[in-house]
Length: 206
Image (cartoon, rainbow, N blue to C red):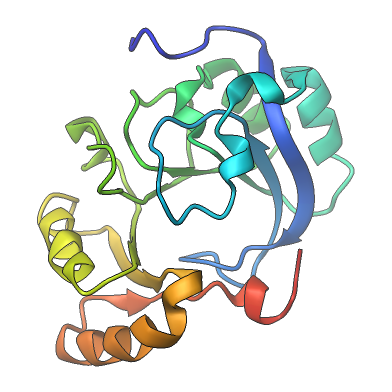
């Protein structure tokens, strides 16, 4: 196991909230989100940079976190970050599954995979290379498009993931006015791809 993974029953949580999944395959679905603290990828356009410092977030026991998820009617639980795979998620996901939840991971794939997952959204970043083990495990490839070179970047990973992996291109929010028209034309020419939009931001959903 990568020595940067944190082996503990306590997980640093930046925020937990019940909302609508705004991106990717489960777009539009009610979901409970758990944003874990800690990230070493360093995307310059990241909209949750407050998540990066793992030590700045309160730690909760697995039991406390799962108890909170049970207060809401959805069975879809999204583990995001930060980079959640900086932490060992075996016990966490095992207990989530035991409580009847569907486990959904959002990751850049830069750390070894731990945990039991119903759905893995792999979102590679140029700032730190993913580990190859994630390629065949990803259910969804979601590439953030900040500039035109990201289309070539996306195609590189489309060749590496499994043939059943869903392929999404998503405009980076701060540059979406410029990139969305380019993505539309790209998908029209390359229909294996689909467009993912951050609909929660368009609808002002927290």
